[in-house]
Amino acid sequence: MAWGEGSGRREEGSRRAAGSWRDRRPGPIGTWTAVGVTVAVLVAANLTLHHWTGLWGAVTAVVVSGVLLGVLRWAGGTRADVGLAPDTLARGARWALALIGLVGLVYLAGALLPATRMLFEDRRYAGMDGGEVMLRVLVLVPVGTVLVEEIAFRGVLYGLVRRDRGAVWATAVSSLLFGLWHVLPSLHLATAKPTLTGVFGHSDVGAALAVSAAVLFTGVAGVLLCELRRRSDSLLAPMGLHWAVNAFGYLVGHLLR
Image (cartoon, rainbow, N blue to C red; front, top):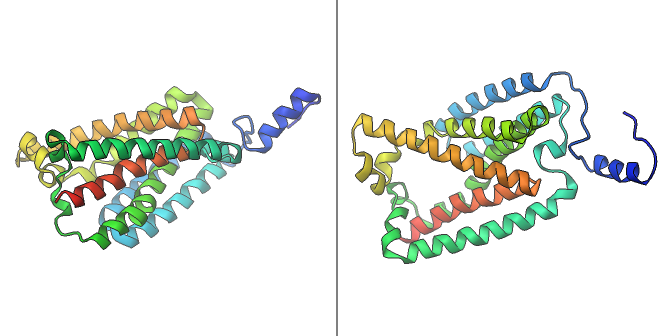
């Protein structure tokens, strides 16, 4: 690939060396073949992670993340495609820290206000002690949930589709699949959270409605996370928000039992 000459070319060359979107190389497989392989890997991973929990689930998440990054590389992808270009990491870290602080303030206010405190009630926290909560907050959530989901949906899928069809298509594909990813984890959501039980009840129809609502909600959340990825140009921003929402949910839910 020709680099050209002149000061403007040198500036462009420095961005390409850092892994910018312009640094595209043909790979052994095409973009949409890579998208298909990624989806197949995610289907298998979703079924596996639904049954393998705890540390085994975290190990599986690491393996799946590595496989997905390999698929991106196989398609000629770069670190910029996945949102991990070196020149964007500092900006992404600043975004992540700001978002973590914001979520912390929102959760604190929600926990202190009687009208919203009930939203944190979850029967799944009943048998957890402090050690298990911290294991989830510091290991299982960041590795078993955030790492694999962000690399998959805002990293590999988003990057592959964006370089072929642009950000709008990338957001749509990523967010739709992110919503569907939550079908299995949402199967018992209506009975786990008392607030949702009051809305959907205990029937099979209520359970199906709860799953549909969870898929819709996470799909919309996926749009927000993709927009954070686009604006920050870094995967660290959606990672920070994703971790904060899940981890602080465990902490507040445990403290308010």
